Image 1 (tube, rainbow, N blue to C red):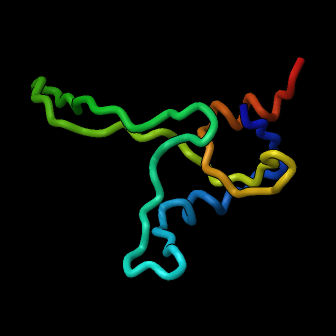
Image 2: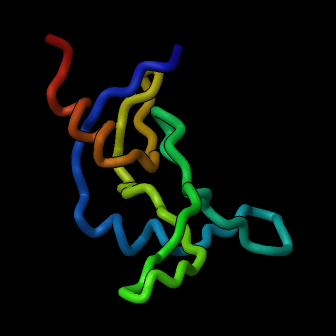
Length: 93
């Protein structure tokens, strides 16, 4: 089990998390996944329902934030959902 410890919260990470990150030496940029690094929460599909009850397909994306955490003694920047962020701030009781 990997232990995650919250270090700091960054509000500007929301815009940076949408950008594609280029891997060194790769020909094309790799796209960041919409998955929480702690709980594994990922996008789910559903419908947008209009007033006339017409259903259109849509995706519900998790609310992810790029945050610096300490993983196995090393500081890393990971994308975690706001629920895990809130739980990590709470600490162990």
